[in-house]
Length: 150
Length: 150
DNA sequence: TGGTTGTCATTCGTACTGCGAACTAAACTA
DNA sequence: TAGTTTAGTTCGCAGTACGAATGACAACCA
Image 1 (cartoon, each protein chain N blue to C red):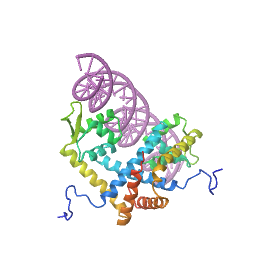
Image 2: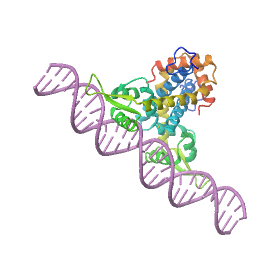
Image 3: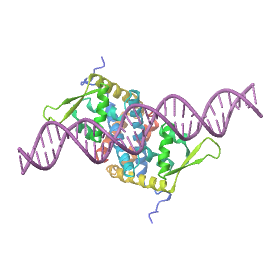
Image 4: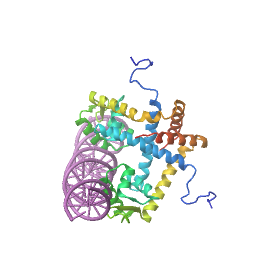
């Protein structure tokens, strides 16, 4: 049963091709991001922290939630970035237990240079697509992400 | 100059929307892969090793190239997986210096269960797209990856 | 108001990742 | 055959990430 398909070797479903493409793309993009981060002596996670804080000021726990990390991990991450002068900790006005994290000017500069570089690294590939293909791709990806991906 | 666009705040280019969608998707997919790996006490990299070796038998350096890692990193990675009985090292028939790596039965089983789980986790999202949208997405992603993404 | 309970963040110990440099062994090459 | 290149390993290092334990504050309630 279930072998109405010609190839039964490892039973690939028809979805597998999209999945492969997705996984491969995810990895390629992640590699680019990691490389850009490394050029500034940052880990991928640190670059993400900077990007998130570009237009926000968050408490530790919110930041951890954004990144899907434990709070104890955040502490170390923020420690090192703070020591490098990229961000700072401040008290919360409304909660004496909470700590708020925000970028320093230097951190903001690095965040902006970093994202510009990411853009520069990725744009050449996206321009292999026509403008209308780009819009189509964007729409499809958004639909996909909105559909869950948990 | 360069502000012929209405919003000049952080000078977003029209490409940025695709890029954001790409980055977001990449992260979501990576998160799923990492979670599945963790459920089997594997890192994302180790899961990738198993997946790569599913239908191949590779020498250390080839494996390192696939993953974009240093050989010294591979040694440790393979050490740990070997200690867990997931893969094995063997000599090369043609080169006395080389070491070939291949999955054990246990490793193969884990690799298969892992990829099945990844499929199970991602398919619900892809089925939010119609079959023809899926094919379109796949084609666009492939075009993108083929275009470089270095 | 005072005590209990829960939340926010930190510290500590542990395991793993990934790198580069130094090293051994095997394979070319001149 | 001597010298060079290539394949892997080992070692030390810094960073990531986790979970358990701890201290400080907040919120609840009796």
